[in-house]
Image (cartoon, rainbow, N blue to C red):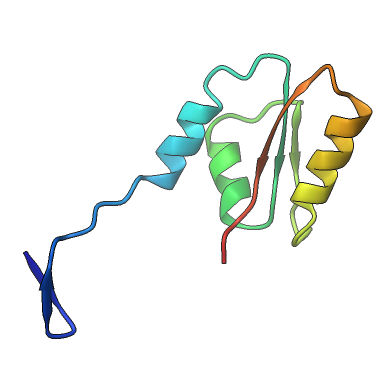
Length: 86
């Protein structure tokens, strides 16, 4: 039990974001990856840099739009798009 703000509750457990991204990208054959500003880009790069990865350094909010555009333009490929939740 953990006491927070005068309340007693169960300790919350969280996933390790970088480990989750690495496991999602472990087998990314025929897959284009688009990552958004900040942490998502660091996590995707830490999972291994590839030519099929498009990092949006400074492209705040653009990853979803670019990922959707790529998916429409090349429907034969698989896509992963990572954005940061604020």
